[in-house]
Length: 516
Image (cartoon, rainbow, N blue to C red):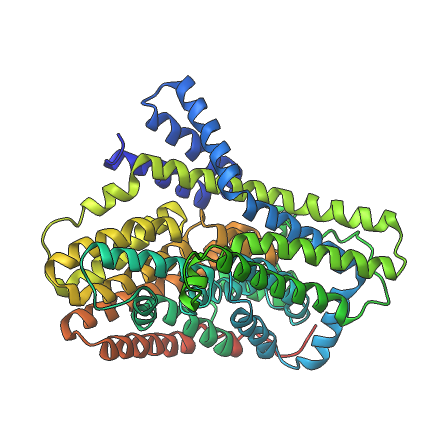
């Protein structure tokens, strides 16, 4: 059953259950069990063993990101206890005068926290949420703005850890397939203008923020937030990872109580990642060599740990009671733990899907000889389907980039960069739309909204960007011009936005520009 159409069942059933039941634990658990049973050909005992082995592998391989999420929860609670979040909120509210400015703060911070998409999703939501809450911006809108300026930015800024890893993979593939026209880092830089989805996704986020375009569930959520002051769907219960409202906060908090831990996190993460990158170089130390050998995840763990220590030191000098500190730390753990469990199950699901050979099967669907002009479209769609099904950008590109390189090297090596760009774009589109994606989950955690509400409200915008990207790749294929393809994509997006603006702009209906 591996590498056949049957291998799609766990992905399809998991996603369908998430959409229709909106019960994340049940849906992911069902997909995991079904996937293991298919892997072991209905041997129940062997399936249990497989699940346990995969759990062990996830804990060994991905424990750092789980620890990072827990530490961010603790750090956030400590900052809340110090009064730093309240102080920053009051300061920002005095500086931010309009609803649009509140949204712009959210978007622009994405270009500041560019080194890791997980950190960007989780940290920005927690920092900006008091500001957007003040202007009655729904948590769904906040999570959309956060998510749309995380992964897309990571893969168009060459200094991120993901960019370095992708460049290293590209360099190896080019060498293996006898393509010597580009170096690894050069190849990555050249893919940026071909990454149509990342570019349109960023542009769409700014246009949505400016014009107040609310589609589908986002429209309902925004209307409820403005008219009733209810920022998320309370009928679903407490949002996993949301701060405990009973946690005390000091009245003497200052903006520095927030900024110092955050700056510590950012600086320490980058410094540690760079130090690891330098330490892992055997030969001459070069910029590309450092980026290739960096370990952002390890940097995040130590950076967040140092940020927690800084917060504790600040609280110590303020003579905060040990009882309040302990309460804050346990509150951070308690409120973040459900989200960590969801993330853990999503990672297990991705491993199960990989074991089933979903990617290999999907790749065979387009193995027949095809006109070169359609290759960017095909690889974009295929990467998007795989990334959506697995929830993994990196896992998908690891499989799709080699397939693209091998095929293009035989047919037309000059088209390898456009195909690489299309694969990266498709990976982001699929992961951006998938309920199995870790960044989808982390965006909802940081923004204080249920994961399913985030996915359902974001999906229309992602689909629009995906469709216009396909159009752009079609133009690219027939003109062989990156400029014409990119401009066509952007112009179509702008046209769609202005059509939607006339019907769905909330500035003409219920959106307010004043705080509550």
